[in-house]
Image (cartoon, rainbow, N blue to C red; front, side, top):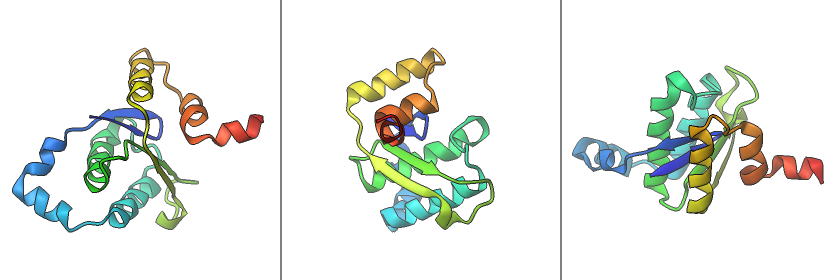
Length: 130
């Protein structure tokens, strides 16, 4: 399953949630707890979804999807490295399959940018240019 984490398309495997130990620990978590975990992660590493933190970002995306299967995109925006976790703003949404696959194709060509994703998904730039 594809998941947009900030400006990166991640390929998540929900099968890993079927392992008994994982299923038990994940089952007791709420979406609010998963969100707080994500805020902690992005407070420490605002570009978590890139390179070295990609595995952690994939696990976070998997947890989010396990808690709400309709969510396939998340934006964790930290103002600075080491900021308080509560300063990390979070948004979730559901993207159409066509859009997420288009983003995957852009990413494969090295053309998926923060500006492109922001404009088409999060809308922060739409207000700025209107």
